[in-house]
Structure formats: structure tokens, C-alpha cells
View 1 (spheres, rainbow, N blue to C red):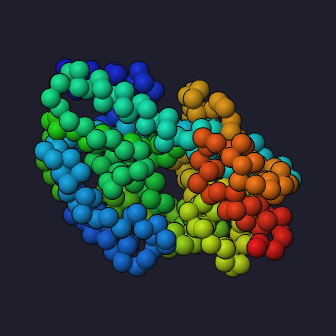
View 2: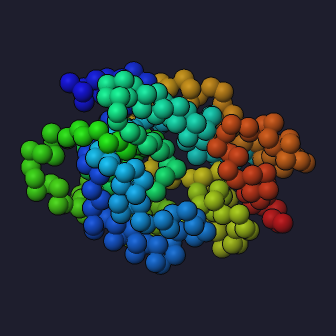
View 3: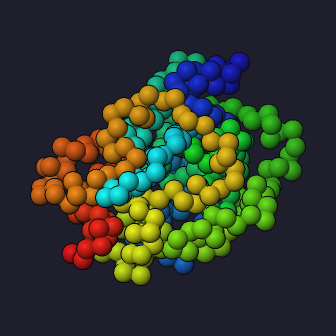
Length: 323
């Protein structure tokens, strides 16, 4: 009953998917991750280098027993890109999803504590040292594909992921039916993909160097958002050809599993449309101050790139020298 009540309340808050699993981290997955870090594929994202809490979630929350994994559909159909505009990744359409989902997580945590007053919780949405896709997979939300995205039966890969670590013990009956499943590492087998390599073949910068391995330093999302330096000229043509001014969805757009994508009905993800699906390049380049930038994008994921980063990207699309 406790599990069902949490599921029902999570759905009432707008979460589309929910699963439960123990806090154990799969060793193969962790070793795979450490190998990725060792090769410096994370670029300048130093925050990804914290492996101790990822190995042992009790370092995050003492006496933790369960990870509640949650998913929220964010897909919408984009119109053809107009001349003079740059494409924005779907996740950045409106207000920052970290804040939207973070608020829902706090509400869910408060609800859990009404069911069990002494329970402790810790929540994250893309912000904590936890292998979230691994736990989402382990809890039954979906399976990680060759493009490293979690692919769900209901929504394909167009889902925001979040999790609550808790001292409450909630078993996942689906996994308990077959104890052998606990030792499998489907994340490394990419069974959901079969022989398909569309994401690898269609990545314009060849950032997916092999199944499940992305060299972030080549990824358009990384280059246009996380990277604070000048974008190497060898990637300029790919950015221009794809029209991406902020982020990139190509490895998801070509995935056959995403034929099941459904338009989301989460009003809070649509309104206000701070960035929308595309940005006017001339308007971006006309911004003279950080204050002007802030007035346009306060509360938007676009803030991550900062004015200089967004204008750097726009200049590449405009085929101008980036300075």
C-alpha cells in the first residue's frame, strides 16, 4: 500500500513514470563510467568526476535503502527551422526543468514523510553524484541505448529523469521475481538497440565513438552549452549544417524507438516559452549587455550558456568570425 500511495501521488504531481530499486550500484556500470572519465571524455565538466558517492549512495544519505526513479515526458514536435534562426534543444523550450521538477520532488518528499514521519530523503534532478540512468534502468523505467539515453516503452527517450534517495525500504517486485536480473548489466549490452547504429551514424561530429560512449568534447550539446571556450573550427560546419544554436537532439531524433514519442501535456514546461523551439540569430547578436540577456532568458536553461556563449554559437550559424 505504501508503494501504491507514493506512485499515485507522484502521478498526481505530473510524473509520468516511477520505479523503485535498492541503492546498490552495478559494478560493471561504475567501472564503465570510471573508464570514460579516465579517457577525459567529460571535457571540462569536473563535477562528473565525483565517483565515491556514485559508488555508495550511503555517502549521500546515511542509512539509505531505496532509490525512487521518476520520469517526465518533455517531447513536442518542432516545426521546420526558418532562415535566420537557430534550433534550440527540446528540453530548453520553457522554464528550467530543474526548478519545475525540483519543486515536484520536494512535494513528493513531503508526502512520503506524512506516510512515514521518521524517514529521510534526498532528491536530485540532473544535479547530484548519482548514476541516474543506471538506477532508472534498474527500477524498470527503461533501457539505456547506444546513444546513452534511457529509452522507455511509453515515451522513447524524451524523458527528464529525477530520483529520490530514501531511508524507506520499498522493494521492486518485478526485479525480485528473478534474482538473476540483479546481476545483469543491460546498460553495457544495449539490448534495446539490437544491430541499429542510427545514432552513431547520424551524429554530425561523430561524438558517439562507440555504443554507449560519447566524447563530450565533440558533442554539439557540450560545445554549445557546457564549453566556455571558443568552439574548434573543425566543428563549425556541422553546427551550421544542423542549425543548432543551443544543444542538440539529433541522436534522439533518428532513434527508431522515438516513433512512439507523444506530445507532452505539461503546461508548466510550455508556458512561458522563454526560448521556444528556435531563436532569432540577429536578435541574439544584438544583445549588448548581460542585463539584456537576463531580461530575455531569466529562468530559462539558456542561462547556462551565458550571453557570450550564446552569441558565440549564433556567430557560427551566421558564418561570422567568432571572437
